[in-house]
Length: 451
Image (cartoon, rainbow, N blue to C red; front, top):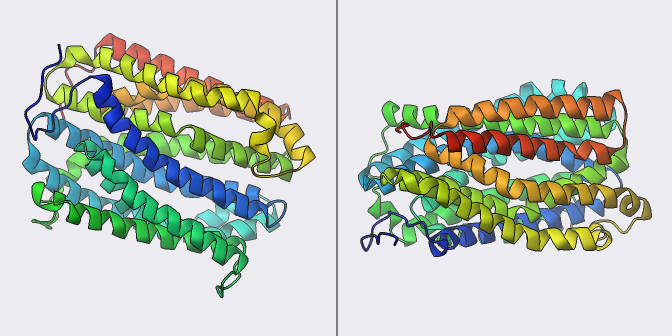
């Protein structure tokens, strides 16, 4: 029988009900921006051929920096969950404040890189027309980075303290404003300027600022700032910042390496033509949209594993991971079946083009299988994050990316095979990641780790 927790305690149980109470609000919060991203792709596809592909190049570039914030998010989430499990609530506020300072420093670096190094990388990687489109877009889009990072730190606080139900309000504020601004700024509706492709960049930056503001209003309105003394001491504390950076830096490297490999993948895809790039950009949308339940269960795994270890209940960790993995696979199968049965209809959401449908169907079937593999692989990987052994995460990612990069280079560039075979790299990626994460957790080497 599960031990009950004290009323008002932040200690978690390992029941299915507890898992779903954390995961489902996260999944809904993830669903809304992915729906927004789908709408964004729909708008850009109406501008003509090539714009969706250009959004793929710029989107993956921005994603490299956004996942750096995601790495800080996961590091902070694991620390907050551990402190919650240990009943050391007074340490949560200082950790959150230091995370804000750290993310603003990282955001400044990201902006400087975009204005100095990004032009060199893009000029040597894509054709002249795509270079001008992409660089102009990125120099606008990158200014949303500080807002995004602060927004992500909010996620860590709410999930780590079992307040995931509050995620949706900030997400709704950002998403609804983004959809509205996309429409009026891309096409120049209702008296707004017609900015075309760059309208999507301005819309995203403004929406991220609105989302960040909504988040902090929610924290204030619900009294979380008082409960955890979030802003009672705004001094820079190098010890807390150092702890957060130590936990997060391997995750930052892990996610940056992973998404950089996606940028490499999209550059190789661009050598196969605009149609191949448009199809692959939509596959990235599919990964995000249909992976919402997976990522919500992954985030739940991080916080629950860390919390349970904080309660010194290490023997419950492996059964907990298996339970979350089963739920993740179950929800994913419900999404996997429509992708396999109705691939034509799914593709027509973005483009009602015969060539796009004909070339896209086999790729979509490959991607659907990859999503199914991801549904359990990422659970085991995030379990490693929850233990605090983030350097192990980095090692797993590094080995996996080497295999992945060799595969896509030979298949897409050296042998010039169809992009369908290129997308099979996702099978290699997730199976490699699962096998190493699974054997690490089963080995028990994580049991002595303290954070």
